[in-house]
Length: 98
Image (cartoon, rainbow, N blue to C red):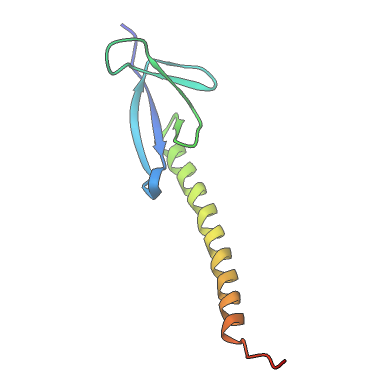
């Protein structure tokens, strides 16, 4: 009997990040193969996609999420600063005389 292989699956859907330990059947450089839910052939999933990412350790998965959310926060900060500038411009508008 072969020893089970586990990966840590990061899902980042709907702003609800999760890390889940999942058993895989096998892996390649680009894919993991998950046991079938219905006893058929294993399901193939990309190790890196918009929906999920797979890592060897929990710490790698957590570091990925931290980096991902740091980028999102920085982008939101820039958007907020831009919106504040626009808001200031709007507040400072005066009626123009023809």
